[in-house]
Image 1 (tube, rainbow, N blue to C red):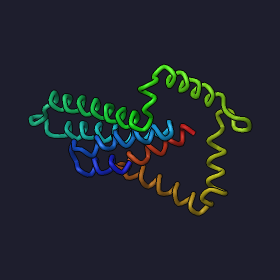
Image 2: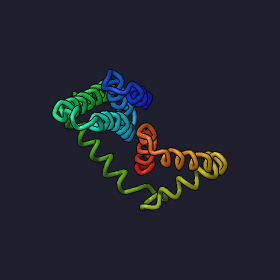
Image 3: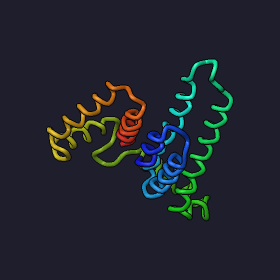
Image 4: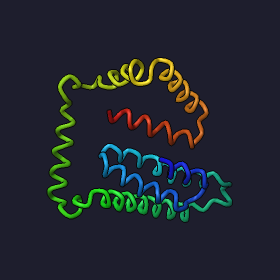
Length: 171
């Protein structure tokens, strides 16, 4: 996430967005749902494209912007897979075994676990965070902070909010 924010702060395509893809791959190799961090550098690449379209129409060059966007998307995914393969080399060495085990894990986790099945799991995590995890005070401040970020409607804030929302949804 740090590299994605650095990429955003740089204001242009740079090595930071590629490092963010690499770090996301390493994160996913540690814990598969860590792949959701890839949404941050992907948003950065998308925001750079959107910002290029905001220039006056006479100066706008859509095809070079699309070309840069396409290459950055491809490079971001390549870096992600390099990072993932670096941390999980047997995903490449034994692809068949890895993919069958991965599908088994997806099926296993989609069934839920005893006492935590169904679509209401989010309520368990919210109540846990509010009571034992953070306490009501910190939890309330975190909610106020997220509302303030959403209210500001800045692109950089969207990096935080989209990632947090996606990660919470995965729970």
